[in-house]
Image (cartoon, rainbow over all chains, first blue to last red; front, top):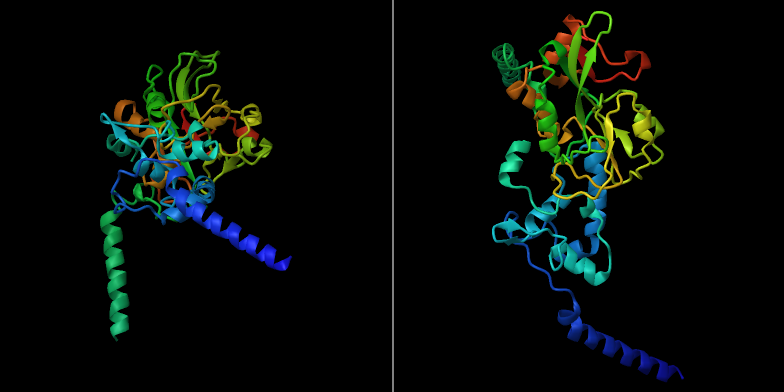
Length: 133
Length: 243
């Protein structure tokens, strides 16, 4: 009994490990890479951390910024948008449009993203930013 | 010995700096200084406005237009529901016929009734006195709109598009003047004040009411100013002259 259980567990473990490796590249959503080189071509944190925790980072930051007025935080939705929005025909494509950076993963995971009912989905033009300052 | 010299040099440098800066710059220096990144807003500041209604022309809407552009407020031509953070009010003294025009926006009260009534804590006052709506937790009940004696807040009735990055806004939330907190944090002044000095009558002055050296503090200490509905005791940060 004990030996069979151990064997079964080993077998299942082997399958899942193989399956994991074999499918990882095929089943995940594909999404456009960041176009900006503002941060030297890398994100503010390593991709695995960002994938797992970006919502926590942003939720924490939004309260700090709005309620306490802390600016220039490491994580910010504005920065996500400014690096990850694609440019097509000279115009920025909204990050929540189908197939774009935010939408592709969120659609895949069936997690609705509410950020963009209020937040801008394309980076501000340099001219607008200059005006804002 | 060495230590003494250093201290004396420092004092000397400080004195020289104060003298050269004093005539023109000390008055506006606090407003023009951006807060360091990562630093929270501080209660050492109390941002406010002084509005001279004698310089405010009743036909001029420079401040209102600038606000709409800055904050990305669409003009849908539906006056009853269109968002307005600042509006022009024309008042007439019925006995004398004396007329005034003045801009009215969120008065950034020290004791804001909107914050008192908010059931979720979305209506809040920042440490530097700026009253804001945290739209992340606003449920759109509009108690604050009813509580505000200045009719300063608006409600977004419809889905919004093309928002400005500096002013995220969406359906189902209350919104209002932020005193352009994003500009103040970057060391600037509100868009309405800037537009008024450029295209209007230069009737608006922005500054730190907590800094006795600021131009606004100097002026309100010497000249007669008033606050709208001062009897309510909410202590607005917006002061008016000539009403």
